Image (tube, rainbow, N blue to C red; front, side, top):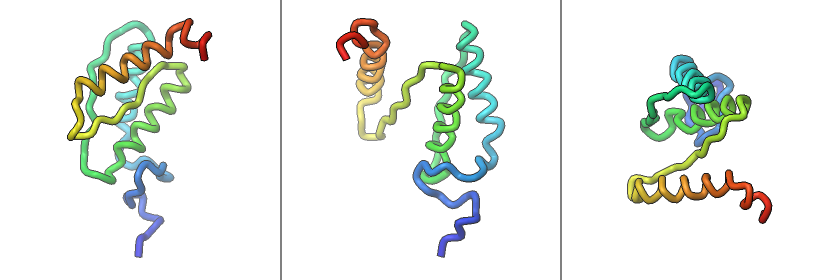
Length: 107
């Protein structure tokens, strides 16, 4: 039987009641967002780990902060079997089109 009170119980992107042990990672992401929003550069970050360790939940928390800051971002997932460069290229193209004034007029 699963102990649902355990904050470490995996659940495919389901937000736990507490994001345990991620304060430093979340703070660094927030600092990066604020730095970029102020015109500074930030180093790219890759979050990786085994299934169920909270990567998606962490990204959702970072995206929530980005939304609060009116920050534009694009969440993409690239599978191990996919072409990484192609996936990034397609995502960037779609994202760039969504920023276009003409795109919003046609929608």
